[in-house]
Image (cartoon, rainbow, N blue to C red; front, side, top):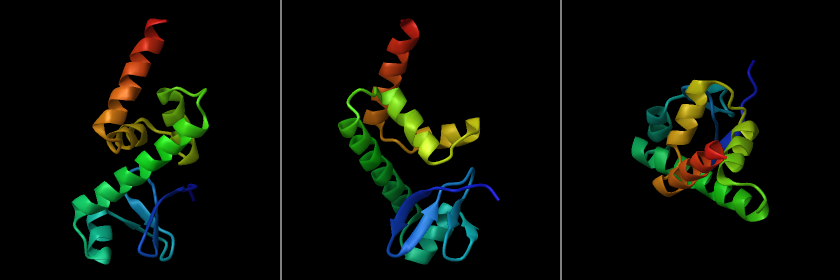
Length: 115
């Protein structure tokens, strides 16, 4: 079984990131965003927003605590923390960041590749 990492804990439910779905630690079942929304009686958009808020908090915390890391390094550290390995996982992970953070990452990556 593939090792999963905690992404979000909402109202007592703990969900783990996976390539296409989330994993409910309590039941051992893979869930889509819509299934999570149904359990919590919220919209699928709200589930996505909660994940985005959680990842933003982690990103900001890591940037603050590790001032020597640039945005790309922080995202790579987070990806490692969450066990993200495949290109699909990286693409889906990147999509969860808000536009401001995406801009920071893009700007930093562009600068690094020019060097």
